[in-house]
Length: 147
Image (cartoon, rainbow, N blue to C red; front, side, top):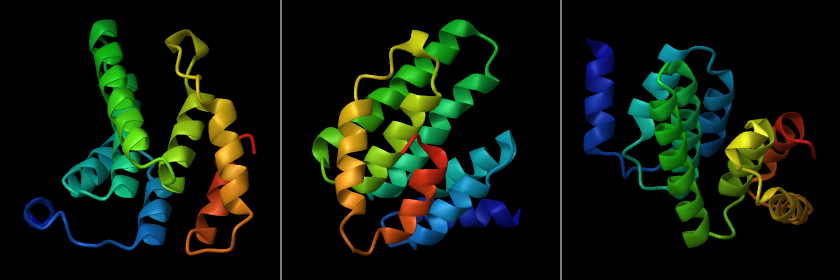
């Protein structure tokens, strides 16, 4: 019942700020379909593109829990399209590029989601050389991508 109120609160006040370093850590600690679903419900109504990147990544992963191949592909493609749209609208967002690179490298090549690997790597390498408020993300980028 408590989780219902948390989800309701987040749904009503999803535009509020959240602590991105904590969210990134939370994302990387998820270890089951259930915890992933809770994360999605908790953050899917936020408007911050950085937060939505992690939501779309998990929605893509949710496709792997579905048995129907058509449904799997539909879930994957819808989430991929939403993520790419966010990146088109927010080209300098390091979270978006990190999530996309991570997904491209972990997605089977047959799905054709590998068009931006080179450009995302170049972007991330350039951004990681700059000292800024996103330096906490560097360790995740190194750990979860080929950089």
